[in-house]
Image (tube, rainbow, N blue to C red; front, side, top):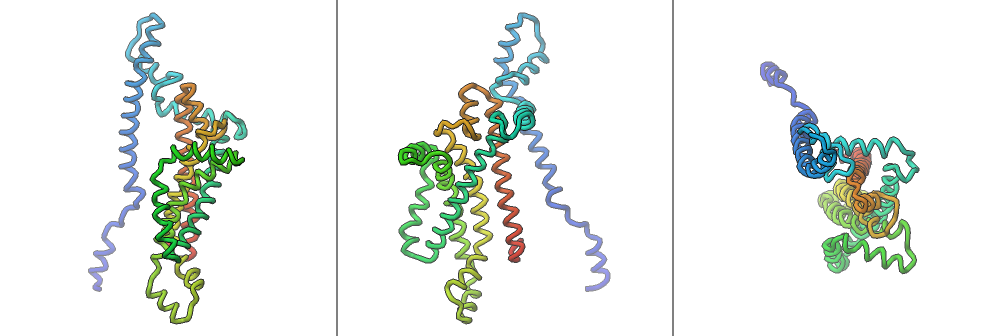
Length: 306
């Protein structure tokens, strides 16, 4: 390569970071969502605001109407700043062990979700290994694995709670089993695809060195399955959080984000409902990013990090 060609390459502008290129579109979409949200809040809370202003018997302006619609104690649609205020009040103004604290309810739901996720992941991994190594198991079990996810969890959760309760299983275990029911499927599918994605040429090479079946599994198939397995784990932990919240609804418990959603709907506390929804999203993201951090650490050590 000539010196002039090298100088032309050096003169090229460096590619911008992916994070920087994504900031502007994300900011624009966020601004649009906020504008639409406040507009909807004004429309939906308008009748309630008008009724309250009419009760005062005094003349009121459009500014009074907007202020009343955006500061109602039980709005039909809370504004984002009201939701932030609810989060600050329930997170910072109560001790984490206080039942009024949102952190307390997050901890209860997180405990259920993680327990069910671990249970479902272990079961899913064992099932995937069996399916890959046994054609009989694949033919007989795989269709049932797929069919199990076609039944809505809202229909299964109450039945599971009642059946398990009648045989003496109450408390955390029934809710964890419901989470495991949701989380085992993506783990099984991901690991089956991962175990079958190993390089056949490397497998043949290992066989020429008289590698046993166990050596092929531990040194080739299992490391090859890690990227797809972690994809399944991230999906599994996210749906496990959903399962924990759904499982808390029919149990009639007083702790957990599901119970907080239920009591909020009973008493028309929309701020409490939205606070629990935001907390559930943050909890799910935290669990997914925790799995992603473990993935980066493990794949980095095995040289599979892209």
